[in-house]
Image (tube, helix red, strand yellow):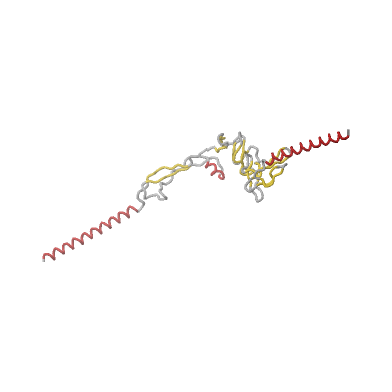
Length: 239
């Protein structure tokens, strides 16, 4: 009777050990399938250290922590490269799909709109929601046009037949520190058109006339010399 009980206990113990061994093997296989690119990988926590250029992504499931090595960080995370390890850091805002830094979003999840690095459920005043890009675009309230500028061509205001003149207008209601940013999103702040220029610059016409007159006198003087020379030659031939 004791022998039978001993054999029964031995059989039960063997079955428990076999079951535990199989369970450990299945867990190890499942975890080490996600150990691609790892330098150090454990059965309980997955990747602990990654190969160079890869990012270590860590997430929690209950009280357990898991790690994996990835080439690019998933949505909701951004990559931070360090001297010892490159990590995927989670964006602070849960409505942020991708971020440049912990508190600066670059793209928002559905039903949220991006405005100055933040994901908002509704766009602030003076902006309009753009569903296609999920961004808040500045509303352009433009001021009056300025007067047309002087007609110029390559910096010159005369001496050419045609040139260009321009006029501008500002975005109303924008603080000076935000004026450039607001102007970038507003079209039609600058206009230009073709214009006639003064063909001759001041004094240029008088100078041209003086040169023409001088050349004409020089030509008449040369003709006079030529006639005197011919007359002298005729007199010598007659004698």
